[in-house]
Length: 570
Image (cartoon, rainbow, N blue to C red):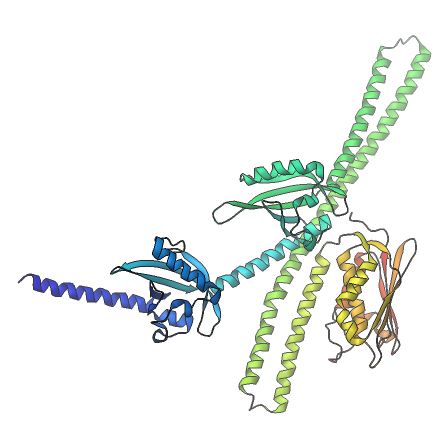
């Protein structure tokens, strides 16, 4: 009498629980997939249908690895299942893991997957909870891009290395300080920039950082690519993995050579004054103890004392003036540094705006116009199609102008690093870069013997790249380009010339062409945004020179620029 109603209640409870489970399964925000120990799909909820594009009826009864696992991971999946069934061990079970997953259309997405095993009637089943986390990767990529921009905008050197001492990160600041490009430095041992006599010191520093200690403003000596030793201030921090294990070291360096030179100069003058003061005290003491009855002696000593006193007075005035001058210099240097910092921040902000906020509306305009043309393809008359083509072309040209302006801002904000460079080698590199265009136009590009000069290698390369590519672009129809590069020099400067036999430039435009976005040819035969010659002008000015052009229509142009011989990094 009692057991029967109890049995009915238990069945109803079980049914209610099952209904609740099905509701949760149906409305879960994550995809839920259930497979057996053979890998065959038993359950596939609506969210999984949305994520993968497969309906449940299409996949239930099929092997999971043939449905959502990319080909390169299928073998590992099957081995992992087999190992768990044999040993009960599954290193990826009951934890969130990131893996690529395959959709019905064979595209992949980033999936966060948690797999939990359960045993029912002597048989294992595996429940997978799956979410699309592709957006995280885009966020990481965007944050990474911003971080790279920040790292490369500072004048301080930022270097990352692993525990073996191999350089893995090398920013623009490090390139300016040491003279090595990132391509030359990354992969090399950190001893590349450490004088031999400081290697043991470096090992002790590394031991401290590996123990988790942060080292700040440690002053030591490093060496440049040209072999010159420089004073630097180091700040080092450990790089930890997710388990907080030290895997590498991050280093910030600042060149303090000028600061050290000023300190040494002041110290030497202070020591000199101290020595003269001791001489003065010695004479004064002798004068005090001498026999005043010896008048001649008094006169002699008095003259000596007067001479020393006068010398000390002069020296004191000189030292006071020097200290005042140095303080004024340091103050001016601090003001310039702050101004430069503000300017760099403005440029960095502009670079962010240009690369993100300004370009996004252009992409949207271009995309929607193309979609509109596609949707109304058969309804638009030729004139309307032409208008859309004009608008799409205009947005593309605007995007190119923004990219070029961004490149220009980066060029002028990057610190100019002067070093000895071989112009013959730069000429060869530029010709090699333009070899395809040279071959296409059947051009002849020649040079005389070019000198070694003190200049910024990257920026000088840009001048030759821009001017020679212009000569290859603005050519006369049916006339193969002939381009000649030459250099003359005097006591003060080098005079470079790049001459061609192209279309030429009208005399009234010979100054205008060096301004930003000034293009004399608006047709599609000569693509470009008109920023290359503005770059050349800015680079030449940074090298203490000037640039100009002499030209005749249908005869060609000769571009001239000068580079000052007395350039240095101070």
